[in-house]
Image (cartoon, rainbow, N blue to C red):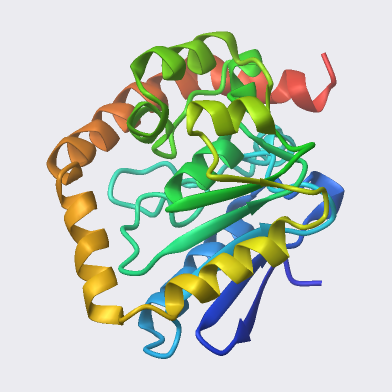
Length: 247
């Protein structure tokens, strides 16, 4: 089975992560496929809003640390797509994350890359990579404080603790909390509501919101990459091996 699938329903495109055996952790091939899926969405004039969903009960557990430990790392070069795929790409149209289960480590960064986040009530979010010496390198350090504020961002980044959906809603980390199993359907309904608005006005307003942060965000991504690669080489590879060995 392909690790990334695309399903279209009129103006709504749903991109599906399909690596349930790895909790939808993303290896190099999956990152490449995920980037291609969103490039296709961006180029499709009929597609107005995308939903990103992980099947099998998990949104995304981040980078595939087992693959990294086996010598198959994700791409981290400057100027390349993000290690998890599209996380350094500015989408011209809205994307909604539909979160069931875990959205942790890079999976949290992938959710933060989306415009909005719909989470099941039993979902769990967090900077779990803190436990393994693997840095945030997919925009998390730049986007998280913009979404939840500096104090809450530092709480999550420094502690690596688990955050339930209700707390995530209270801090603004997610936008909707729904019954378990309903994240995809609610996200697609929300996408349809957004897609029904006059398009040029909605896209112009969205672009203006992001434009207020773009110069600082570009610099933040460069700084994150520089520090993150150094940390990855110093601790992350060994941490990935520890994770793979269940230490």
